[in-house]
Image (spheres, one colour):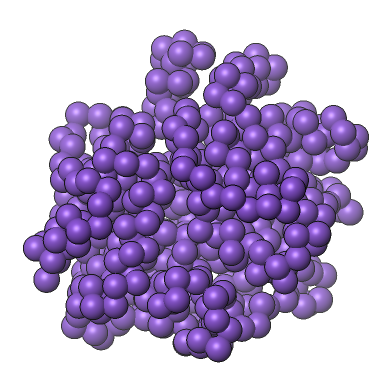
Length: 434
């Protein structure tokens, strides 16, 4: 299959180029020339399929022309070493837990899949691959875990100083080995801008053999579509879910749209954001106005210029009317988010993280105006990753910290501080990445 830039449909590349180069030279994003649709042979039996069987069918639909089936099965098996259980809080109110992977965040699905696909695409080559990634919290930890000590790779993670939780920071900075963390004096948007600029500097990108693990990379999105189908199949027959997605860079929601494109019956999508509400405002007005991001307690959603907006609009033929018919947006303040954390615990005995709490608020509001609808809210990270907020709202020690997170607490943080300017970053790359 060929892939084109969202900025220029005549710019065509193969799978290897799209995945390993990540970003077209025109600053667009890669999309498949033909978006696959799963046939009746899949949808006639999808509710009886296992998570792994669903994942393989989706993977083969996207990559089967370029990667042997045996290798795709191996990649899927290595990716899905954990489940994504659907938890029911009340009739019509469901939570999809995406935090059962090694770094306790939904990013584990995409990062583990990407690492394995890239290993296949670079097999037999002697050039080291440099994975460059910006993170607002969870992406960096998932990528660090997926690529840690993988031969032939080195990972450089950019994160905004003071804007990730303490345990998230340890996941980025304490592994060592082939993982390097850069603490940028700025926002996530500044980190993302530096990453994009490095890819658009062709001399830098070629010399350092750069690839990205952000959701600008298509191989991050495809595996995230697995759990949309996996969760929907667990609902009663003929129930079309409303997927409620806590959103920042909008890769996770784009993955849901890909699942819909494959044929998944969906009633609606809800983009649930904190005060960084550029997409909800677009959905309401038809005007897209990126703005500087604002720091909130749901830090992974602190994005003012979401990269995947161009992919989402491309999926709707750049039609605002079609886009807004399929998706609505809602935004909530930190105060509302804190209240939701307390309310979910009080009503259901369930501990929900600040990002999931934003989603739960949107789901509740939607059901209030659409009686009888069934919502699935994506719980994107384990609440233990946000101890300050959870302890303040529920009490110290209420949320149990999983062992794989607790062991990081005493590890040493190792990070290099840099400004948000391009030249110091370019100089650092030149001096540290040969």
